[in-house]
Image (spheres, rainbow, N blue to C red):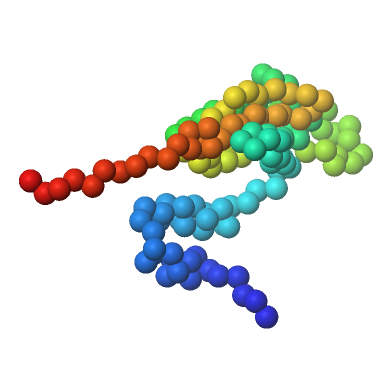
Length: 144
């Protein structure tokens, strides 16, 4: 029976071999705690360095949505319009509520575009790591 390593196990495994990855391990811990389910979304890889976040936002207009980048956090917020017809529903299974969803982006991810197509918010991302992946030789200096 295989067990999934906990954050504590990951720290013991990687700490002797890495420097500066503590924030990544902390981020993994935070992701495990806060996984909201609304609105549903996909993250697709469409090319080697291009990704699309697709978020189902049926009922929201462009003016109801806000997409911001705060440091390395992509935040998508939806502000639902208030309706006065709540009493006329016999059954209401379609959610129309405010939401906030946060995605943590790597340092070399750049937001290229955002659009709404048929109730889907699409946010285009590009990974600049591979485009700047040049070998750099470090010169070892003699002590003076």
